[in-house]
Each structure stands twice: as C-alpha cells, then as structure tokens.
Amino acid sequence: MNGELRRQREAAEKLDAATRESYRAAVDHAFELQKDGMKLSRAFFQNWVQTLEEGAEINRRALEDLRRIATEQRQVFYGLSRDSLDAYDGFLDSLKQYEEETSSNRPGNRGF
Image (cartoon, rainbow, N blue to C red; front, side, top):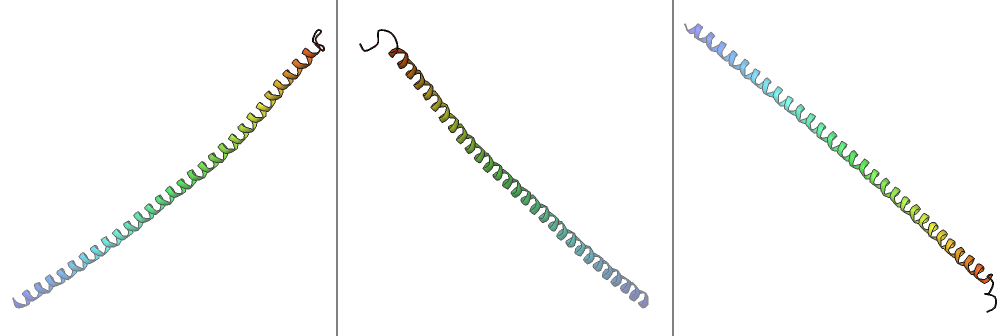
C-alpha cells in the first residue's frame, strides 16, 4: 500500500500543480483582458474628448464668422442710413430753394 499511497500523492501533487498553473494562466488572461479593456476605454475617451474639442472649435469659428457678418451688416446699414439722411436733407433743401424761388417770382413780392 505504500506504493499506492505514493502514487496517489504524486497524482494529487500533479493535479494541484496543474490546477495552480491553470489558475495562474486564467488570472494572467483576465489581467490582459482588463488591460485591453482599459486601453479601449482610454482610446474611446480620448476620441470623445477630441470630438468635443473639434466641435467647440467649429462653434468658435462659426461665432467669429457671425460676428464679422454682423459687423459688416451694421456698417452697411449705417452707410445706407447716412446716404438716406443725406438724400432727405438734399430733398428738403431743394424744397426750400424752390419755395424761395417761387415766392420771389410772385407778383407783389418784388422789391417791397
């Protein structure tokens, strides 16, 4: 029975060693999967941040363009307003001049 006991011990030791090696391999594999998952998460997050930054840059440029367009439109509006006021002033001056000319040419307004 001594030989039988020794064989059982050796078999148990081999089984124990195989189990430990299998557990170690499973743990190593799990850590590798976890590291890959972390890399994937980090890459996803970095891409997400980059997308947000690009969107913010696009919005910033759009706002700059809108400000520039608003400034240009305001300048055009002011120019048109000035031109319109100048034309109206000219019209009023021509009415005044016409009135002065017609009133000086009326009979009874000469020299008296």
